[in-house]
Structure formats: structure tokens, C-alpha cells
Image (cartoon, rainbow, N blue to C red; front, top):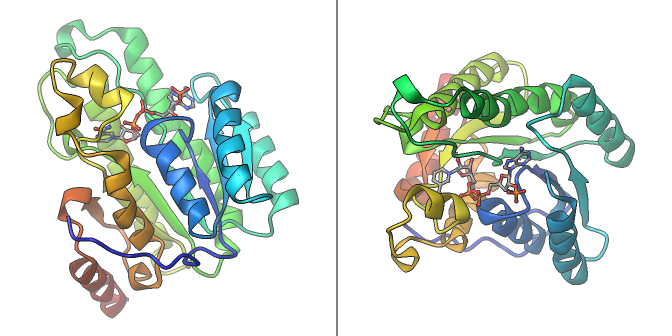
Length: 264
Ligand SMILES: NC(=O)c1ccc[n+]([C@@H]2O[C@H](COP(=O)([O-])OP(=O)(O)OC[C@H]3O[C@@H](n4cnc5c(N)ncnc54)[C@H](OP(=O)(O)O)[C@@H]3O)[C@@H](O)[C@H]2O)c1
């Protein structure tokens, strides 16, 4: 992965919401966005875990972090509306939204796939991203240059045996990204893309590959240059793309953006 040195003030005056910020990639991302100047709004299901992240970030960047516990498994339309209303009272606009929360579920043949896991994964991995996007689009529209990032996976681009609802939910996320990107291409400043972090050393990865040596898997920290780049000026044209962390190359990705701007 090519390195990218983000300036320390890359995200000054930006407000960015990250879901699943209580652990894994989302937790590291939340800290990194704040370290580069953003005010971060952190969603997760565990108040306790969010409070620990809050304390960490608040000690480094006072007044630039807020937390909002929300369990995507049980949240309904009204919860997302209330969240959006509360954020609108606090922030004039939203400059970024990273749909990062996700569940892995069972690995099993479709024939025996547990119905409960299927429903839970669709709710957390797909429906929550739909509800949250819909509720926050007005706030994102008020930004001059908003970025909306869905989190995908290699099994969301090519199906793989026994990955069941996880794979199917990630395909759905790609569909949501493409549909929204096409809708917004001509009518808004919101850039919409999907990002596949690839194998990353987190609880989810450990659950998926229990026999693997965790040290052989890249850390969440190693993904930060790619994430930060996607919030940079150079990435302002990237839209409707299914990106892979392992392909990160600032020059090539900037060209992807230019190709989109030329088509517009
Ligand atoms: N790690 C990888 O190798 C890998 C590879 C490809 C794609 N991804 C994707 O990257 C994203 C982050 O994965 P990760 O590895 O960092 O996973 P992780 O360590 O398991 O973290 C997942 C995050 O989602 C949150 N979450 C789970 N269920 C939720 C719910 N019902 N309501 C609200 N939040 C909920 C978790 O909250 P708790 O802290 O309460 O559990 C946690 O903050 C996911 O979308 C995943 O599919 C990961």
C-alpha cells in the first residue's frame, strides 16, 4: 500500500460521523479523523465502550467528540430521525459519514444458514446504512464537499461459499452505494463510494479466521492513509467507486476522480 501523509489540519472544521466506532477499524478511524482536525460523532451499541473512546479523544481534542449509542439491530426509523434532529441542532452540516459498523454472523452453507443471523445481518449491515443515510442526507447536502463511505468486503464483490448473509449484505451495500451515487452524481456535492479494508487485525477477523496468527494481518492503523486520502481535496472527484485498501495509490485514485469529473 502506498503511503500518504495527510496534513495535520486536513479535516479542520469538518464534522464526520463514524458508525461502529467502539471497536476495530471504526475506533482507530475515529481517533485518526480527530487527530487530523475533525469533530467526530461516534455511533456504537455499547455506551461503555463509546465512553472509553470519548475519554481518549476528548483528552487530546477537547470539545471535538460526541458519542451517540444506538443498537442497529433494534433501532427503527424513529430512532434515526431523532438522531438526525439532535445532530442538526448541534451542527450546521455534516461533512462525512462512514458506514463502518458490521456483523459477521455464522459461516455456514445457505441451506443451513441460521435465520436469526440472516435477519440480524440484514438489519445491521444493510438496513441501518439505509436508514442512517436517508436521515442524514439533508445535513450532508448542506456541506460544500461531503464524503459518504460504505464499508464493503471482498465477499461483497465476488460471492464465496459459507459466507452467507455477510457476503449477501455486502453485495447489498455495493448496490446501495451505486444507486445513491448515480442519484446524487448530477444533483449534489456528496461523493459516495465503497471501501473494502481487506483483512484487518480486529475481533471480526479473529472470529472469521480463528487459526490465523493475528500478527500476520495488517493493523487498522495501516488503513488510515487511505481513509484520510478519501477525505482529502485530491479525492474530491472520486464518486461511485468500489475501492480496495490494498490498491491504494494516491495518484491512481486521484485519476479515478478526474475521470468522473470529465464525464460530468
Ligand atoms: N476486519 C476485517 O478483516 C474486515 C475485512 C473486510 C471488511 N471489514 C468490514 O469493516 C467494518 C469494520 O469491521 P471490524 O473488523 O472493525 O469489526 P469489529 O472489530 O467487529 O467492529 C465492528 C463494529 O461494529 C459495531 N456493531 C456491531 N453490531 C452493532 C449493532 N448492532 N449496532 C451498532 N454497532 C454495531 C461494533 O460494536 P461493539 O463494539 O459493540 O461490538 C463495532 O464497533 C465492518 O463493516 C466489516 O464488515 C472488515
